Length: 395
Image 1: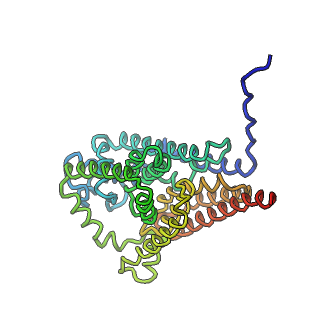
Image 2: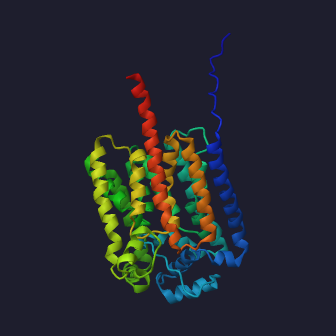
């Protein structure tokens, strides 16, 4: 008698390009895991992480003290093992303060472990969601997300860029099915609003065009709650934050990103120059959206939009390039060019070496975002070209 159970589909074997991508990403991920596991047992390693500033800020909030007090943060950070002579100050907006409050009730070592687990969870969930958005293909492309160099640096340094990555992935996942949840997820993105300016312009236009106002409601609720908690913890937080961001130490600091490099090349004292690329990009982004408004697909169309937002961000660090993961994964999924996948493996390997050898303040990091963008454009072009061939053949 014939069986009604369908035989499992034959899984395609990974080719050399995919294997090289997985090997490079897996090797970098393994080294990162070893370094992270040794951090709690090394005072010098733990003290040199940016995580220390979040822990110190949490300590201040737990005592309802000023989270932007340079002198007090310096004392706390040095007591926690921070090596440099200065103090690291959390520059995320005040609505991000509740995020670090739990760290204020933990010792530096336990807080470091808790924070690292939280960041790892953000990366794992985000990459899984992005893979599912592309149908969970049975290949090795998803290793790209797990071993993406800027994301690994976030884990090593304890940086917060993985939270916006998770917010972006959840928005892409739920914007059409659970708009209120998607709006809540956007709160994670606005922990670093400077990375999403053209993206935000298109998002607002899309919300108005499609009347997706539940997304606005979700974001407004998250903003209201987090802002209220921040105000309760330390009422002058907003004033102190504005004073910090207007201080010469912040405004005259060089950040290795294209927009800030442009300002320093023209006139370092004219801060408004670094916002010009983002303003021009917003105009392009709105035109791009209007051209595709009737067929707009956030999973597909957000990729060049997010890369353009990163390229023109008023200021961004190397680890903020974590936001490029959805776009690069999308490009790797849609392209049929094995050469481009192999080239991507080589680029990631070069960036891994750069990350290990070069300080984060170096201008060498200026090449990364343009290269990610150029690679994505090539991958997108080859996918369209291959898709047009069957149509030409049938004609």
